[in-house]
Image (cartoon, rainbow, N blue to C red; front, side):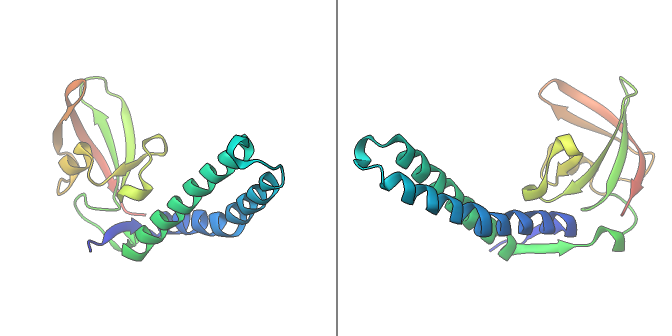
Amino acid sequence: MDKLPLTRTGQQMLDTELRKLKSDERPAIIRAISEAREHGDLSENAEYHAAREKQSFIEGRIKELESILSRAEVIDPAKLSGSVKFGATVTLVDEDTDEERSFQIVGEPEADLEKGLLNLKAPLARALIGKDEGDSVEVQTPGGARSYEILSIRYI
């Protein structure tokens, strides 16, 4: 099985979600199913079917999180330095629009572009790996080719 790189923060976030699902969500849905059963005929009981569907989702997510965490390879970015690699927080400037953005390169399970967490497997992240401050990278996006200059690389 392949190891999944995660930051310490990403591991903690997934672990917190798993604990919440097991300690809060799972018992709540079991109670909801029990209450819905008491309403009688299950074939026409919408509450029962909705609760069973939610239970299926919760159990699936628990299995997914347990799998991710069992394969996690936690990497502490604070112990790294140098060119861009996993865990780096990279500040870029779009060479066409002069717009600055910062991204931290993280593992797939913790990626969230809205929070500036860029999936290690994303085209931009792959283009940045191994580059240094001042380097330019060109990335193919759905909107066409984009060029970025690396302004800074930090490991925090």
